[in-house]
Image (cartoon, rainbow, N blue to C red; front, top):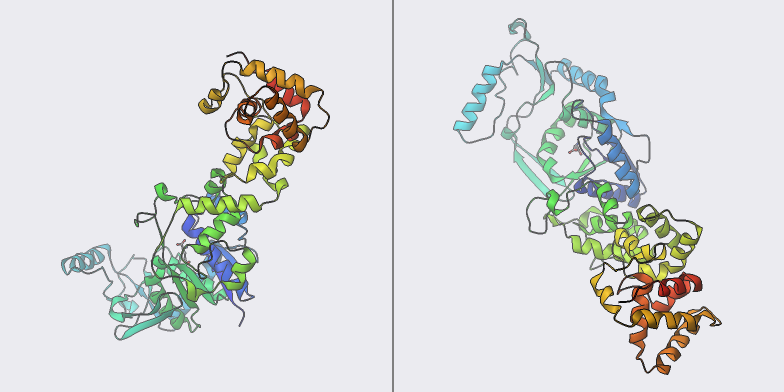
Length: 464
Ligand code: GLU
């Protein structure tokens, strides 16, 4: 059997972080088993499904590398087929027209409330002949659920889960206007798309029982279900915006790399021993549903940031330069790009976010403005620093090689000749060149900036 999975978001908002993880698990499961992963946009709620949301979801998925192996399926386009299935079930006596009025439904709701149980339709039209239908009422179509016994689903994450069939009422397949409901559409589409494994959030577990019986009524094989626990915030409460319930593209804007987010989402609710850093190849090799935990995972920004720092260090320098380019305060010309590229090894070791990497790289393009805004750097430029830097600039002007090694030697000699410790020379130079007290190695910075730029920056420091 070829494994076929799907991610089926409702496009009523962005691709949130829980959705991204569901997509990832479906993608990995399919890849691990040499199968296919499909994307179905559940846009049946025409009012709430917007093109912006559809684009945002596709954008988020393609950023994460989780696009469908085949053409994207739009659920709304299958409405005719969904209706056809419902009508067939009516013909076969497995579903029926229900002419129940609003008042009757309200009564059922009140009774349920009084008895302290959830509202269930009482089946009043299940065995009634449509000849008794009141005039002028458009009926809904309901499917017959078993009224006794129990149903067990062997969920690949939750294990064996059983409910009493009394809890399942005859739910609606077609609304009074003839339109199919979510429950019907999902089952028909999953069947028609040949889905073998339904992997989704455990908020859908109760739906699975209804869907299970709908598959049976249709005479179709039920897919395997895997309901993964939701993601909670670090405090254990349901994930909110404050915790990071953001769109995937928001993570890109915050400065995360897609491979870091994928690695983080993978570890959120799934484990392979104590491994934290897991490449995509390893994830495909190792991922299976038996190692998905049953309890909600807690979202932790600090962990995500650490992973991101790791992936920034691993990332190709050209890629990093192109990621920071649009974040730079000025347009990046050829000289600027060459400096960023040459300095990237030193820059990327410290950065945990692309946004920080951009901030920390800006000095390669824009000379510091005086007075310095960074107070720690400003402190490094004491009385006399300006004169010292001018003197050093003159000393370095005629200096032979402009390489890290030669510069280090020249600066040490310069300091020793004046009885100044190395720091006393190096610190003001750092502040003059980078405007900061923290930067990549000073000689590396000097070599990358080049002689002319270094001398001009040193000479530009005003008297204190
Ligand atoms: N469209 C549903 C949702 O976004 C998912 C349905 C499913 O995975 O079966 O919650």
